[in-house]
Amino acid sequence: MENRYISIAALREGLYVYYQQGNYLFKVDYDGQATQIPLQIEMSGNPVWMTANYDGEVFLIGHGPYELVAIDNEGKGKVVASSIMGDPWSFAWSPDQNWLYIGECGGVIKMEIK
Image 1 (cartoon, rainbow, N blue to C red):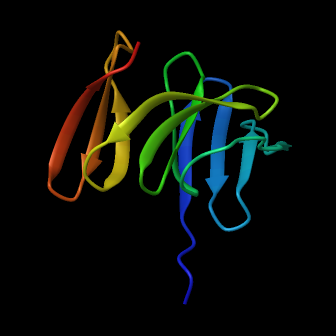
Image 2 (image 1 turned 180 degrees about the vertical axis):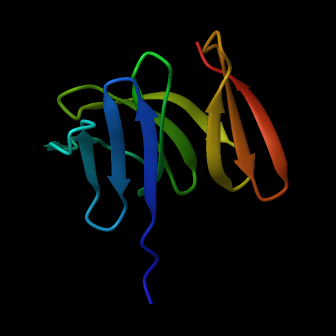
């Protein structure tokens, strides 16, 4: 059976929902209106998890080699961090958004993002 991961990030204006099977990213407002953001990204591994920071920027991380890719409103991606260690499963941003905390199987990794 194939894994089917879903990641959700809640922001002031609504939710971002990433569905791994099919590689779909949706922006859903709190009234239930959904808009698909067509992804136009190149990653060394398939995207698996999604997170968003306090400014509403969306990021995907792919299976190894692990890269963090920023996604713009048109679905285009830019690698902002690479060579992430461990096996990432969850993410949280520091209040100043300079650090990304990555939950992985063996603990938490603190990574500076510039």
